[in-house]
Length: 255
Image (tube, rainbow, N blue to C red):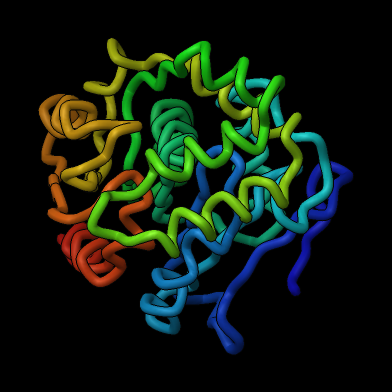
């Protein structure tokens, strides 16, 4: 387990043993209620050519804290983590809420990013009120429903069951904060200001952030690549890791 003290909290992250701190940094950010485990197929794939790091955001996984109230606050935590880790610049890959953080980062401090990977995310992330209410009144049922919606039907039963377990391992209060932060997020009128390399990845069967969200980002971020991956839902990086790795590599390899 690797940790860094960031703004008074110990934040946990994962990087393969022997990662070269001088290699180009590739920083992965999970979504609402997630952890670094959502990105392990990608971390293993891209090391050691990249300094591949998957972070547990505050209040998630093994990191201390109580989450954050807004996407902007999470963005500031990520920048502070980069400072503590000695990452002058990174290619930032985010899933769902993590993608919102990456977008907010690209709009505020683009000079610190070599590019962004936007996976299962959108320029706006509205959350249905029934989800927020369900997390308070019937958390186990709500977690099960979210996990069911997060995977394509062809992914089978094992991944959704594991996804439910992962959600219930974490703090439900933090999960609710995450969803409220997502619900308030809206950069639809700003994303066309992003001028760094970008790749947008979406599962063709994503019910939480559907393909139209990805298409919107692709159409408005100049030069962005788009990969819509068949047979995958919202958790596309776990359902179809090889395809996601190829999509990210296509952007990383661009001159």
